[in-house]
Length: 280
Image (cartoon, rainbow, N blue to C red; front, side, top):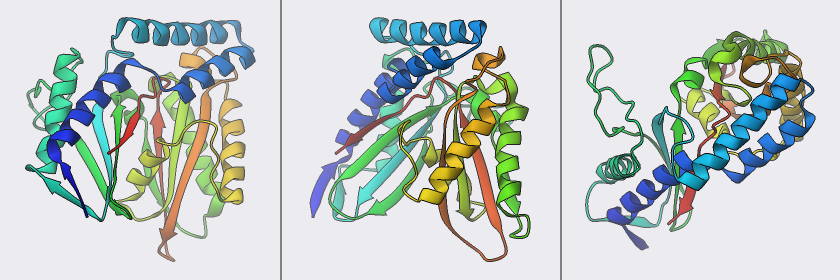
């Protein structure tokens, strides 16, 4: 057994909120750089250069990559041999978000009610997804998720008779419908399987994979490459100005499903694909 103090968790999350919102992850930055080289549209290439320059400026000045601080998604993979000490894990997560956002002057985007709500002022509460894993460590990931890309996401349950072709068309159609509204070039997260209530989380977890990784199942890896090519053939391009780079990658996560249904969720992530991970 190993004891972890909740204040260590709060401190870690505060730091992740600061760094994730100001420093574009290396895999995303490198993907933008590579996209500049292969984009055939002059205005698309110029747009990608501006996205890269914005990331450089945000890092050097310690300011937000995007004015939308997003909804703070926190993923906790908690080792089953971990014992928490010092209080509530949920309260510690929200303390970390509060400290990170306020100390870095990041915009609070959370309302306390769905309608006629007031801004909470500190971007809390966070959305927390926890799962138990083997071991005595805690893997903490913060994903600030902007509203524009999330608004363009979709979920549908298919029948087995509709098959893979219908799922592929749904994913591509989701990107086409989003157009410039999700701030391309995108990372396209896809969840397939599980159930209505969990497939959306599966799609969001797909966004946590580094660009350049491929699904370990070769068949699913083939889908990722095929769907990426089809999405980039849409011609939407960077920020919707036209071009050959509409998406940087497609990441698919799968799970077992009921024999009668194929849940599918598509969670889009904008070019400001902010994330950070620390293992406690």
